[in-house]
Image 1 (tube, rainbow, N blue to C red):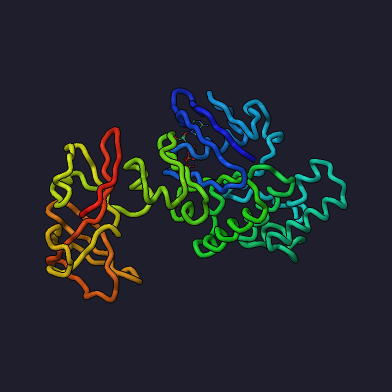
Image 2: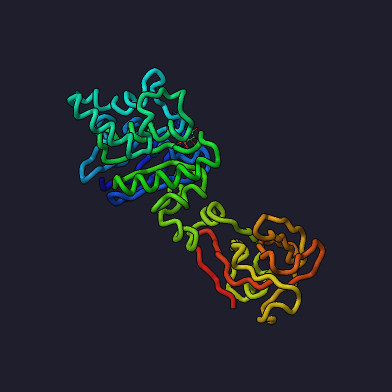
Amino acid sequence: MHIEVRNLNKNFGDFHAVKDVSFDIEKGKLIGLLGPSGGGKTSILRMLAGLEAPSSGDIVFHGKRVNDLPPQERGIGFVFQNYALFKHMTVFDNVAFGLKVKKMPKEQIRERVMYLVELTGLKGFEHRYPHQLSGGQRQRVAFARALAPEPQLLLLDEPFAAIDAKIRTELRTWLKEMIERVGITSIFVTHDQDEAIEVADEIMIISKGRLEQKGSPWDIYKNPETPFVASFIGESSFIDNISSLRGFESAAVHPETKALIRPEYIELGKPGEIKLASATMPATVKHVHFRGSEWMVELMVGDTKLITYRSLEKDVLHPGENVSVLLHRAYLFNDSDSWIMENP
Ligand code: ATP
């Protein structure tokens, strides 16, 4: 289902929770709504579902404005973080629930439920009750139940939040594959950037009620449009006074300009190790942390702290040691604009 949202607003009393949010979602895409707690993600999801009325704006499904349609007429499936399964019903009856409500003939229900049970890897578990399942299995039941009435849109609110870290990674991959197979337009809420990057075709970054940026995970990582997006997605060092950094002092940089530098844009070497000596800056190692596959190195260039990584094969650095630093790239931001600077 193609979705259009235009100038969506939500006020709770005098609190403006969702501010003029507009976006389009193409049919079949898996979208991650990502952002810090309290940003408005769940409010947007609930308005799409019809569980909350917009204060203003339009929600259009398939070319038809649905603002006034009740949830059950919107063709939506819902998966919540706490499973919300019926505890006194078996897996079969949980999945069959929406179909019985629709008064589907018994034999057809059986066929559809068995198809979904198989699809979600729950064959053999049909007669178990929710308390006899693991967290991951329960979430699969919730997914099968949501898909049973053949919705056009699947909404998932923090679907992995209650699952163990180890199973969560498995379940994410599983969900992505499943949604691709079914081909259903899906939107999931998360505050976990790794989850959004790994699972979503496109991410929408929501902060303080606003849509900050929408794009593929790679695009958002490579071309962040606001300092918030740059610091929320991926790791970066945030620099207030960039005129202190060599190679950047020549740019027409306003004192208000802020810079963000990703760890991979910092080349680090012992003095003399970096080829392009003219653009290097002296730095001091502040901390070195072993991270399993590499060293994380915290550096000071004057008063500026930078974070980068160094491979295990290179000689270990020690706190207090002098090194050379070359910045290959930075994101620069002022109030109205953002741009990327390459060096040299
Ligand atoms: P989280 O990740 O913590 O779930 P979120 O991004 O989903 O956060 P929302 O749940 O949409 O954020 O909430 C956005 C803001 O609106 C929050 O400040 C919240 O306190 C407020 N809010 C949400 N629902 C209501 C309500 N029914 N009445 C008053 N304020 C509300």
